[in-house]
Each structure stands twice: as C-alpha cells, then as structure tokens.
Length: 229
Image (cartoon, rainbow, N blue to C red):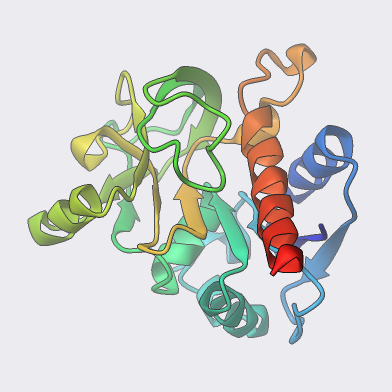
C-alpha cells in the first residue's frame, strides 16, 4: 500500500503524518507538493494539518484550488482512501468532498490539549479495528475546529452513519459534539483531532495507531478479495 502526504505552503503536520505511516505501518510513503497533477500511484492520501496559505480568507479556502485537489477529488471518486486531519478536514469541506464547514471555536481561543473521542462508527475503513463506543485519547490543536452543518445535513449524517467520532467533552462548540465525519461512501474521512500525534506511548497516547492499521487492513482485504475473483 502506498501513501501520499500532501504538502501545501504552511502545512506543519506533514512530517507527523509521514512518520506515523513510516513508523506504524512500514509502508511506502511520499510527500506530494500541492502542484502535483497525478496521484494515480497512491492508495491512500493524507491531507495534513497546519496553516495552509496562512489560513487567509478562511481555513482551506485557498488550498481547495490547488492543482492537487482535482486529483484528490478524482481519487475519492475512484474509491481510494482519503484522510483529512485538522486543516486537512477544513480543506476537504471547502473542496466539497465532505459536507459542512469549520468555524471559530466557540471560546474564540486556540485549543491545544488531549481530548477524549468516542468511536461512533467502527464500520469505516479507518476505524474498523476500534470497538463501537470505544473512548480514545487524541490531541487537538486548532482555533477553527467548530464543526457546523444545517439540520438537514446533520439528519443525513446520522441517517447514513457518517459521524465517525464525537467528543466526550466538546472543546470547541461543534454541532452534535462531532469530531470527525465521512462522505456517504465512507472512503473520505475528515477529523479535527490529530491521530498521527497519538501513535506512540512517548507521545502520550497510542490510540491513534489503529486508524493507520485499520486502513492498511481494509486495503489488503479489498485487494485479496479482488484477486480471488
């Protein structure tokens, strides 16, 4: 399985994502610059956190027009796995690959600390190795992590089991305590907390590791079943 870690001007969690894949999975991983126009070699695309383009206009509002995002949309359509973390989540919503938007934290302050998440959907490729309802400790670091969508969209998210994580103690005012969601197909996931910063006990938590091992297993299972056919 081959991973791409996208890099925009201002990305600052790209190295964290790269090391999480390298150290946790030992699978091939490349940094891919925002001007890239071909992602066909990759099975999973990680859109990392940071302050892409300085968060001017709105978080992710400029990055969504980067050349690589057309390829991300194409990969999503092809069923490849895409994970947007923090600013990456913001970029995916701006690009229309996930519903809703991220607003300023209700406190109007930057929040940077561990937070407890509840796994709401463990039938997703990124969460299959967690137990339903499992509580995990994953750090956050954001000023605009307040997830918002209208009532109709929220009803659709609930109906289609697209809410992947909820906060146990909501740190930012997100509607319905939402910390992470997926597209309807389930192959595109966005979340504000940083699982790549929770893959080793030295970092304070290993609870993010299963997100990476889950996606590797999902990819292997998919390819084994395809080879049998």
